[in-house]
Amino acid sequence: MEAGSLTARGGRTLPERSPRARAIDPLLRWTLTGLAALILLLIGFFFIRLFIEAKPAFDKFGYVGFVFDNNWDVSREIFGAWPLVVGTLITSAIALILGVPVAIATAIYTTELSPRHLRQPLTIIVELLAAVPSVVYGLWGIIVLAPKLKGPEQWFSDTFSFLPLVGGPVSIPNCFVAGLIMAIMILPIVSAISREVMVTVPSENKEAALALGATRWEMIRIAVLPYSRSGISGAAMLGLGRAIGETIAVTIVIGNAPNVPDSIFSQGYTLAAVIANEFGEAASDPTHRAALIAAGLVLFVLTLLVNAIARHFVNRAQRGERTVPKGMAG
Amino acid sequence: MTTLPAVSGRRRVTDSGMRALMLVLTLIAIVPLVLILYYLIKEGIGAWSKDFFTTDPTGRFLGNPGGIKSAIWGTIEMVALASLIAIPIGIGVALYLVEYGKQGRFANVVRYFVDVMTGVPSVVFGLFVYIVLVVTKVGGTFAAWKGSVALALLMLPVVTRSAEVVLNLVPDSLREGALALGAPRWRVVFRVVLPSALPGLVTGSLLAVARAAGETAPLLFTAAFVFGTQFDLSQRMNSLPLQIFSDVGQAQDRLVQRAWGAALTLVLLVLILSLVARLAQRRSRLA
Image (cartoon, rainbow over all chains, first blue to last red; front, side, top):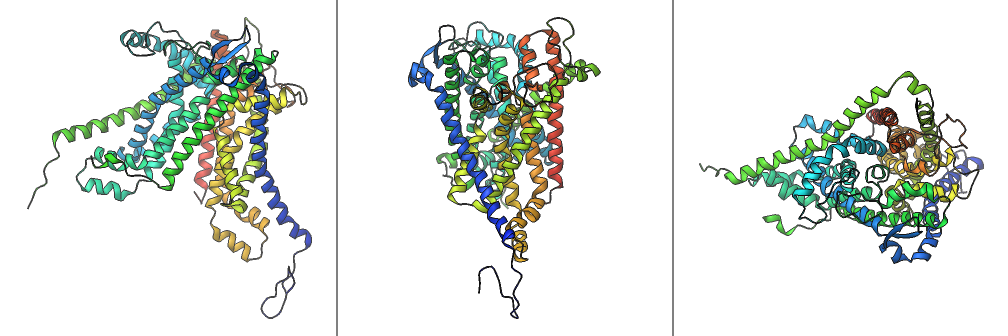
């Protein structure tokens, strides 16, 4: 039998496709494969171009020097990004500490505790937070939130001045407000992923706990939380990735002062904010521009690491490879 | 008959205490949304007027600051062009992953890098387009189409991931049925797979559009900022997020007022897009 023709029962041959019609299939296949390959090329190109453009800054200050030197002085053309790195870490930490517990509680409440008819509305309301653009959070943060929070912040700062990074005067845009805004912004994604994981907890596990006489909360603690722990960790890491890269809202509310902050209530700066804020003045200054691009590269690598860890956790949760935690019997 | 021992008082208190705590934290999660919407409506409606939507910003230091006409048009134009770039490519890549790549090594590498793209901060995409297209002066320096490219990079992974999920939901029996009838592969893709996945594809794409409409950072480096309404995509262009960003930075009451009005407009735009996306999803027979 010749290629391209089939013999049907009774000896009749089915009509053969014209060569042109047969050419469309491989064409589609290779076009789509090309598009997929384009993504890889794009990311490769992306990384290499960022690196080439950032190289002058790394050459001048060294890789370690650029990241760890506590000196970002635009007027003297000295660029050590340590204040920015610290600012990024402090604000992201505040965002995680404030945002993740609330997000997990929301997920627990909507999956396990709330009346059935409230589940859908509550979920939608929390997800609406993700529909508010970053710049609107910034506007609200600087005009409404920051002035209103000044009093309580000052009280907290005076009362708990024994804690590290607390104490001293409160400035109006400050790291804490930036962290709080970020916490609100990461809430929907952390909550959504935690909820997705908690929904997958087998009802056998939950029913077994209840049948053994556990209260609702005990059921959540011994059946739901251990099962979804790795997914929740992944959700928190994804939230961290978002927080690190958050730009415009932070630029508006953090005050943009390139110093390592004395307290969470003083002004700060982050890697993302420095790029958005100083890029205009850097256009005419090659060293400054290279330093900003280097800051972008550091940010890129940081988010890449955080997201890789997050994906590892979430994948593990989805594959169901869970280790039974030691404290489960307790 | 044995009676079960009653749940001890301490356990009962812990139970109701923790349940109450979960409820309180959930309510706390809702507070910011309520507050933001309250201030947006209160301050934003006050800024709205007919002139607000029909005049461009004047840029004058004193007197009438003007409206946001150029910003609304700019956002619509740039997001439309970004969608024209990102949606076909994104769906194409998803088609490759589902129809051809499947679980092969190359397909998994592509999937991994699409995930990587999802995590890249938008400011870094802006920086990248700035380096590649603005610094090198491809057709002038700042231009609206470069802003669209940056937005498209941002949308691409969102479109691809959501399209992949939806295309995977198309039952294999449909594909096999069409192939058994003698349809060539491309016809199966265009006449069977894509039409049955259409509502889901629309949802994913609209959510990506909604996300792009609110982005500021990538436009800052690429489309820059002007006052006048611009329909030429090779020129600088205003947009709603940039207008808000620049008005907040000025810290003048009448500019902040305009920022609130623009913010309310932007949030409504994004909400309408998300709502339409959800309606499209509801019509889907697959999801």
